[in-house]
Length: 142
Image (cartoon, rainbow, N blue to C red; front, top):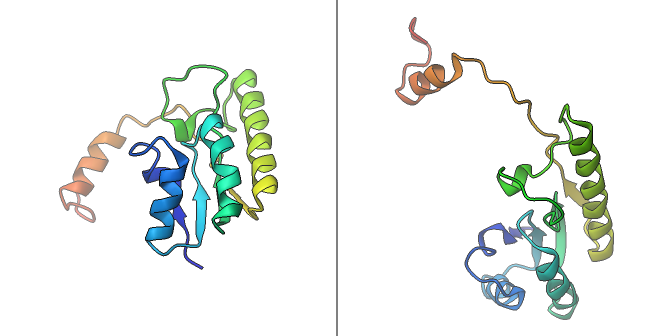
């Protein structure tokens, strides 16, 4: 079964009814609820899913998007399960549990989780990346 993510729609149409209409118009019967879905949008979307016969294939953590603390990070990396900071790890676990609860409520069998990243970058990384982009993979310079 093919499924489409709500990720691309959250920035175009703020009203979940418009998302559902587009999803149905494209011929999809399944949807992934993305990490960009807010609590308010989710509350509007949930009753529409059953009414319109849309199957939720998966939930992308965190769904709904956390709204308890501001972040400078991209929403897909709002809290990191791999964080060295205990408060952040606990928040990540808290919001992951909310995503699992959301999945259960809407009948999704899958929750996509990114465990996180470490705040460490090798100083050589940007140069190696540029060499790769320049097609120099496999050269002595690379």
